[in-house]
Image (cartoon, rainbow, N blue to C red; front, top):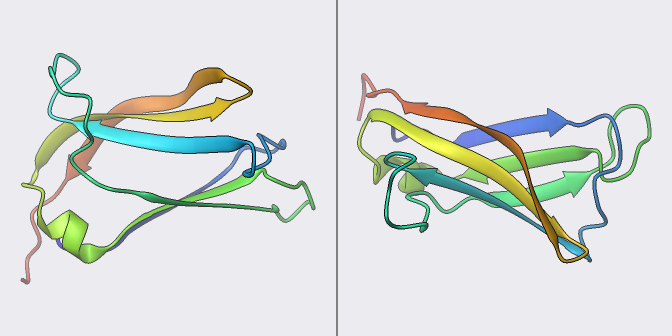
Length: 103
């Protein structure tokens, strides 16, 4: 809580050219939430991995202000890619926000 968030994923294969694709990550209070609006606004950067594979590296970020605004607790998330008029969920699970010791 209150710290910047950054997660880098190496898919090992080129996922989609970012000029033709949109990544999204939604964090919700539960999988039964009536709203599909994410509690956190994430940024996405697509790059080349260490093996030279284009579009294989995805970095997801949220600044500390975004993370400060969310209460500590357990949430659900999904990571989706919309490309070529097809939406695919690549990751999903629990998103845990721990209370920070310092403000």
